[in-house]
Image (cartoon, rainbow, N blue to C red; front, side, top):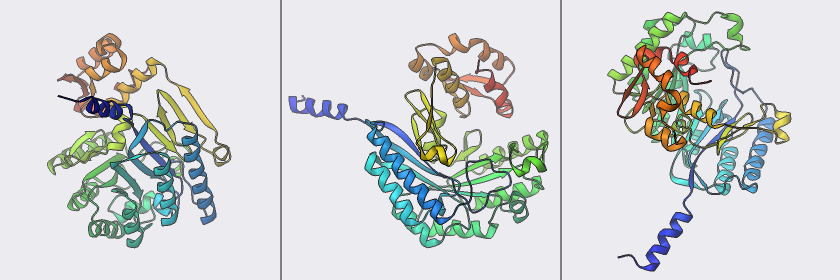
Length: 387
């Protein structure tokens, strides 16, 4: 039997329970812009990086002062870019210390940092681990030097191996490798070789993306019709899934594969429409069904300009569908009803029936999900949920 004191303790715990929040910290600097890259990043001087770090600290403090962080705790932190490993240890420590001073970070938080081979030393990597970063995401893209050169990457395969060896020696237990298919000059044989080399390292997680030629990049001028044809792209995508499945990796999202227990918790927040808050140039956030985006240019970011868009219920339902269908498990019928008080059939019955009839969607155990054929044309299916 609970005493009055016990009941009071339970009530206090409930009252002080924090809501989960994913934090993204954008570091928009790189050694050199890759030929295919349309991310918000550029090279910068040490003085420019230092100035930016101070702006980042100011933004975090302003967010806390506004009350925006009240009632939340960070379940995941993702430091992306750009190349975040270009920050000095002092700067990185300042950023993380400021974050922890304005927002509780739970003890088992997944804290990820992106890095590229050739941009970090073993000493830097040890320092990175010492401040609590427990997940490393390495932008390898390919283990073929010719393909790396074609992409405009600054590293060679040997540097990727060296960085991986350091993560082993320093005891990192949660590591992702970014790989890319559809690279100019890539063949099925060289791509298979890259996959073989990647799995030989036994990473806990693999992200394998098809190269998309984006307008405004040098690649757009070089390959206006795309780097590879659609048939080749699909063939390499199918090869990726079959190969990694045979190696014990579970595909849990269109382009992401993991050993059991190592799905990226931060990215799952995005795909399930959890709340997330981005700090830095151009960083996006979703808080209480309001989408926020920091100014993408430095002059307006310095002034603290933020774009705000209140999402309608229709917007939120559409997002739950086209983001949730990226996940192999799909969209939960029960979760949709709990969130909106409406059934999936009531809102999207015609669309669901159309794609199930065409063999692009399936339903099982309360989830609607893309079939193998549906994954091939996922953008076509997802577009139907946006009215």
